[in-house]
Amino acid sequence: MITSPAFLLVIVAILSGTALGYRDNCSGSGLCNKGMGPNCRGAYARFSDNTVYNGYTSRTNGNCVAIYRCDGSYPGLSGAQIKNLFAPIYGGQGCKGCGSHAFNGGSYEGTLNYCSNCVDSGNPN
Ligand SMILES: *[C@@H]1O[C@H](CO)[C@@H](O)[C@H](O)[C@H]1NC(C)=O
Image (cartoon, rainbow, N blue to C red; front, side, top):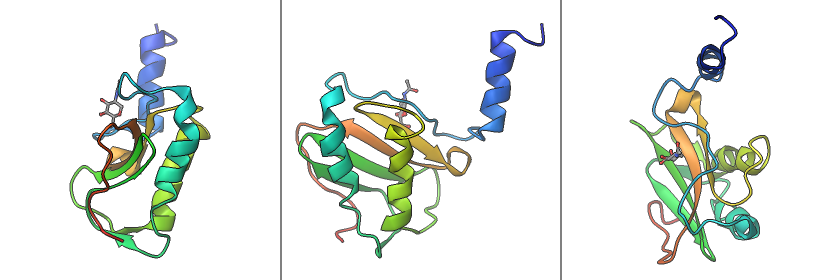
């Protein structure tokens, strides 16, 4: 009973601190594909290291959009810190195209997704 898959999933969820809104995943639009990696890396590289982001902000490159968003108030992360939100999507999570990485117990995240009308939003810098 205690080693059932469902029980282990609960333990993993608790240990990884994903109690709040956002969770890690490798999903996104149906148009996501594994060839998007270079464009998505280029999209999140466009956050400026020394700018502090205090609201929903997206950066696009090719057909990929990199979205920074929070579930509640924004902690005021620098672009350098935000880049560290995105890096695990292709690092530890092993996603190939799209995906999301949650931080701080799921209160904020970075998402890489397919876009067709790709426009930057949020902080202009
Ligand atoms: C993956 O994460 C994104 C961003 O938080 C969310 O919108 C989407 O519903 C999640 N997908 C799955 C299958 O959990």
